[in-house]
Structures are given as structure tokens and as C-alpha cells.
Image (cartoon, rainbow, N blue to C red; front, top):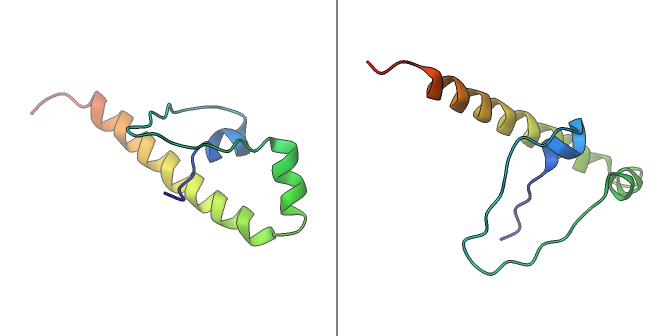
Length: 72
């Protein structure tokens, strides 16, 4: 509850993940234009989103690298 996804796509324009809900879920969609309008009032949200996007992109990259390693 209260989590978000899609921040990498919002910031970079490139989608790198799929999301599957495992229980009934209510989703809210925020367009890039709406996001930018919101940021004009609350800049600290942008910093948090960028930190989360960076962390998740690094985790995804590590997962891809681990998947490509030959078995020991």
C-alpha cells in the first residue's frame, strides 16, 4: 500500500518493467504533464522519485548481469 511504480519510464521515457498485482488494487495514473505541474509546487517529490528510479534501475541492471553469468 502506498508504493509507486513507473518512475523510470516517467523520468526517462523508456519502460523497463512490468507490474502484476497479486491482489485487488486501485491504481492512479499520473501523466508526465501532470507530474511536471505538480513538481512546480513540491520539488522534494522529484528528488525522492529520482532516488527511487536510480535504485530500481541499478537493481534491474544487477539482475540482468546476474542472469547472464554462467553457472559455477
